[in-house]
Length: 120
Image (cartoon, rainbow, N blue to C red):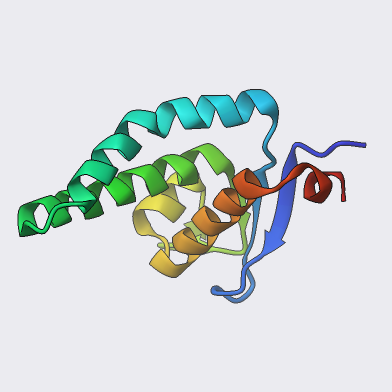
């Protein structure tokens, strides 16, 4: 049976589990299309020594990670923000930055899996 999501226990935020999308052919294509232009701009600005370009590269990098986060995070359990159960937007806008980074890493890991890893 194929599961379209994967549940992961957070290593950075105690008591939190989150679900991320597993990557299908169509989903990978959708995500790559959504970051393609930003990635090209990021590469251009990151190659520069100018402080303004380095700042722009950092902004672009975070924008790409935000796309990964919004695309990949299905839900989050065990996180309470401002007295209520956190939804995806709460994780993005008010949740712990370490948790958001962990979720982005999980999505990026899904994108990097090869065929043998996906079968297992």
